[in-house]
Image (tube, rainbow, N blue to C red):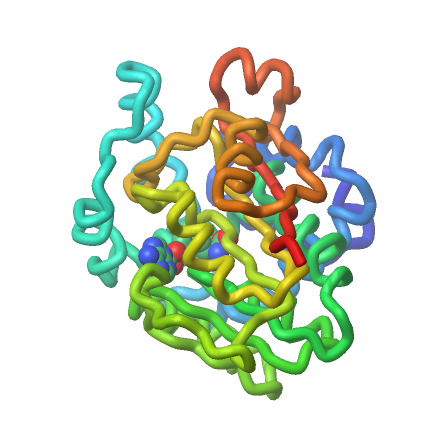
Length: 313
Ligand SMILES: C[S@@+](CC[C@H](N)C(=O)[O-])C[C@H]1O[C@@H](n2cnc3c(N)ncnc32)[C@H](O)[C@@H]1O
């Protein structure tokens, strides 16, 4: 795993996972190959944050690694088998995903822990995370106001706080576990800037006042969790200042127990953003570890679709 070079935290994570799960070493090697230095640098910063959180998790880093393996083998794999067989996701209704996942605290806890490591170990997740850090955050103005909808484990929000140039940082999530995990992560990572965390269903948010608008909103790995992604984007866009940015990160062809809307690729993700009245200003597709975009498209393999859009001024 020479790609890790002097990146000590990244090497610690990859070696710990590789030791606990030797059969996964080949996947990790493929996932690291082809990452640019900029992406590896973000993976290193993220790994460093994860290593700071790990001692506080019951069972420490080994438990986090076990949750990552649980994500791969017991959460994603059965859904993948369903997807290959029926060409559709198993669930299609929010209330079923809510019952199976969001309202199931022990499951949600392991799921979010696993996703945390996937942001380092899965090439598509690592690239999307780096896009947020290197392309979305720097575009927000000094003193900008940032909202994340569905922070999950809270690490994107941590990087927003660490950027140091924002005046307001807020997040909404429908899952009490996600809100608690995000608060805990921000506290452990020493974030002192105020971060407003609200248990809030996106669709139930009241109409915003003029002074409550945001310069940037992030919806990462959430639209595929919703029955009506266009309506969700329209609902979120009401909270954007004119000209404000919306970063959407959606996995295409990516079965999971709480993925109920099937995105088919980057064009589909852009079409949904445009249907919601947004102007797309950048769009990039990141294929899953160890494959090319052409192959991922041909065989319906997982692709993270990163769409940066703007509310028309
Ligand atoms: C897979 S996590 C994404 C975490 C993080 N944003 C990331 O990119 O890794 C999806 C999150 O969206 C939240 N969520 C799902 N439906 C929601 C809704 N209607 N309103 C607010 N949050 C929602 C879930 O509770 C969960 O925390």
